[in-house]
Amino acid sequence: MGHDTRVLLLGGTAQGRVLASALVQAGFAVTTSLAGRTRTPAPVPGNVRVGGFGGVAGLVTWLRDNKAQLIVNATHPFAAQMSANALAASQRLGLPLLRLSRPSWGERPDSSRWNWVPDHETAANVAASLKGTVFLAVGRQSLPHYFGIPNRVVARVADATGLAVPDDWVLVESRGPFSLASETEFFDTYGIAVLVAKDSGGPHAEAKLDVCTARGLDVVVVARPISAAVTETVYTIDDAVAWAKSHSQTAALVSDNIDRI
Ligand code: NAP
Image 1: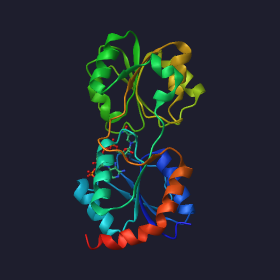
Image 2 (image 1 turned 45 degrees about the vertical axis):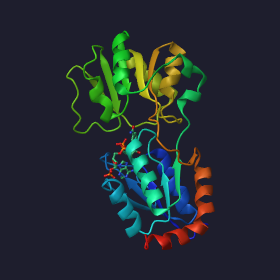
Image 3 (image 1 turned 90 degrees about the vertical axis):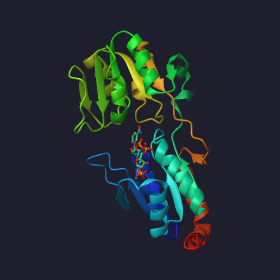
Image 4 (image 1 turned 180 degrees about the vertical axis):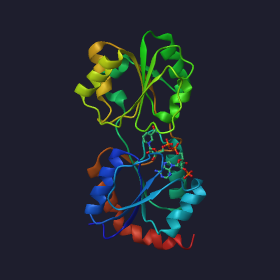
C-alpha cells in the first residue's frame, strides 16, 4: 500500500486519470495537476489543482508547500515544457520522478509509409503539397500553423470554446476515444484524403491511422519533441503503481530533507 505517500501527478490525459484512480486505491495521497485548458475536465479521483505553477520556481514552491514525496509526469507526450519543468524541479529537490507515457505510433508496421516531420511548420508545407481535404488532428494550440494551407480543411478538437479558425474551415468538437467505426464514418462524412496528426501514441486516437492505412490515404505525422534529458519512463499503469510503491518507503526520508534545502 502507498501508506499515504504524497504524489503530485501531472495530468491532463486519460492515462493520468486511470493512474490517479489506481494510486488512490493503492493508498497514495494523490494530487492531480491540470493545466486548466479544458473547460469541463473529466472527474479525477483524489485531489485536483488547476492552473500553471509559474515555471520551475513555482513548481518547486508548490512541491515544498505541499510536502510532495513523489512526482509522476503523466502529461501528453507533446507537453514538453511541463515535462522539462518537472525534471528540473525533481532534480532541485531530489524528488523521484517518473514519466508515464504511451508507446510511439512509430512502432506500428504501417508507420514507414507516413510522412514523418519534425514540426508543424513542415507538416503544413507537406499537407499543402498534397491533394484533397485535410483532416487536422493536431490539437487546438497547433492549428495556427495551418491557417495558410490551400486545401479544404476539417479540424477536430476536444474543446472548441473561443477558437477562431479561417472561415472556410470545418471545425468539429469531439473528445473521443474514437472507434474504427466512428472514424470510418467521420472520414466518409467529410471526404478526408489527408490526415495530419501528432505522434501522440496509445490506443485512444489510433483508429484514424487504421482508416488511412485501409484506404491508402496520405498521412503526415509530427514526431515527438526530443527531451534534452531522459527521465525514467514506463508505459503501463501497473508499472507506474509498482514504481510508486517501490519509492514510497524512501519517499518520507527525502521529503523530510526538502525543508532544509
Ligand atoms: P506544455 O506546453 O508542456 O506546458 C506549458 C505550461 O502549461 C507549463 O509550463 C505549465 O505552466 C502549464 N502546464 C502544462 N501542463 C500542466 C499541468 N498538468 N499542470 C499544471 N500546469 C501545467 O503543455 P501543453 O502541451 O500546453 O499541455 C497542457 C496540458 O494539456 C497538459 O496537462 C497535457 O497533458 C494536456 N494535453 C496536451 C496535449 C498536447 O498535444 N500538447 C494533448 C492533450 C492533452 P507553468 O510553467 O506556469 O507551470
